[in-house]
Length: 196
Image 1 (cartoon, rainbow, N blue to C red):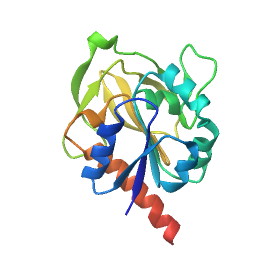
Image 2 (image 1 turned 30 degrees about the vertical axis):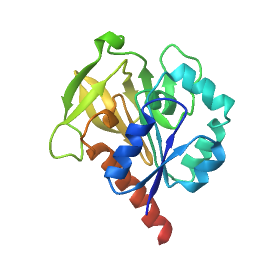
Image 3 (image 1 turned 180 degrees about the vertical axis):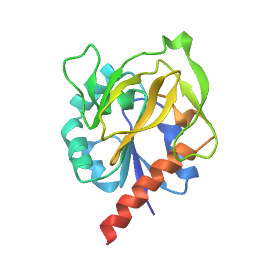
């Protein structure tokens, strides 16, 4: 069985675990860097990116997550998780993990009170997906190596590059598990390649 970790520092961790399990994989909360070896893929949930970075530094996650990605293991960042993955962050000198060749802007859609839901056309899905946007970032620009997976109002809100997937919204806050399933399929593909 596939085991997918959810970084347990902040965010809707339980909801991600439930979505993973709804897709037939095992979900595991990751609270220590050494636990990364026990999972095949990793979800970095939403939260507040500055706080998340501080916690990642405190618990020494930055380099282990980079090493995890370098092995080809898939990572999915949602909302603040996307910010953590981005190579460039508007109005910030340094990236956090720098694993996804995109530039992001934080809080692009307004404050918490401006939260909203929107139906999105997502590549690979046959029907719209309802994205829950809460103080969401958006992707300002993406390298040509990055596949744009979804846009909203002319802004990129989901992208994939090799084993890295990121979105501006919170797929775990809906009962629609298709985006988690898409990530599970990425993890399956990774595991299949290992077995060959």
